[in-house]
Image (cartoon, rainbow, N blue to C red):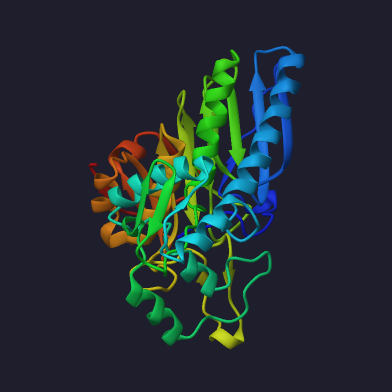
Length: 349
């Protein structure tokens, strides 16, 4: 699955780039590091005092969320994972339980292609580290974990009491935490009376309202040419756009026969998912868009339609390993292609 806590990703590597628009007097920006990536905030049609107070609040909230949901640094999630391994009942932090229930529901809808319980498998590949992995794990080690079939259904939580019946389970919320956080932050901004805003976390983003008199416009990057764009799309109020790509983190060297081994692990095989370069999803719930981007990437060109329907996703643009486009009919009506691409499949969802 996709994990977002691995390293600080420079802006040049983001999946979605906010396109430039003419500034208004009441437009405010903030940029900082959180969740292992660059966060960009844009707020409009408010006074400076409210903007600066909101920026401070968002920074503080993201720092707390980062500590709470980080999979390999000390915090509530690390403690929960350690206790899950004992298979004994324990009290879990409410801040983790809330995200767990969201992640479990999305895992079930994706038919477990999005599977946050495979944290041990992701760690085995070396992606639970700030350092880039250099060597792929052995086939035997991968198979040993696959045989134990860790899944979200292995965990039961009643109130704050939690337990796992499978010691191989290790939760990694990298494929849903950013979306969940963005949904929560924008809800708080609306409560404060802010109706026009964008929160972009490493290229995954959600908007409310408009950018002045126009809709928010974002662009989908070329997964093989970091300075090129494939398409652009205008987002409506409360829409999120999330991308999973094989270019975010990977290992590729002579020790691995120069294979491109990226960090989006297929829970069915234990190896990086094949067939896809990137998937972009648009949805009005950022957590859903986040998880769906991972699930559809793993589903690939052969199964993306089935998975999208199961997760009730209407807007999808998938780029396969040949660079060809697979797109939903609803998405095709909204995107503007910035370069010529072969569309090999268009589907009604």
